[in-house]
Image (cartoon, rainbow, N blue to C red; front, side, top):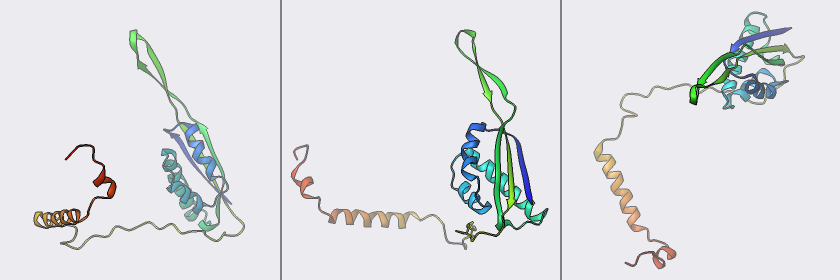
Length: 169
């Protein structure tokens, strides 16, 4: 069984999206998700959203086991280009091509589930009880700064600092 997910007219150049897509070929769905979470490129967010959609569709629609899903094929094709121009000097114009991409992701069910190498933990936001997390008052901030000043005075400068000074004292 396989699950196909498509994202069409994504506003990213296919060349940039292929860089991320090539990393994911043959990985399990959870490993691919972990890879995408740590990528900084803009294409990673688009592909991550597509992957999560494909896994959810396979889970609910075709009743496939998400632990056995493997990325069988990921393809990035060029979509239509929006052609614009940028005004330049002496009445000229420079053409601009705003490229789009069509992403196709095919998830296949593997023979046996691989043991997970790690678990993705999404931290939950915790509300602080009232009174905690408030900014420090002026008095406590001044007291802390005075303590720091005292500790600085106690420290003596090193030999080099004492011996060599640019300006005579």
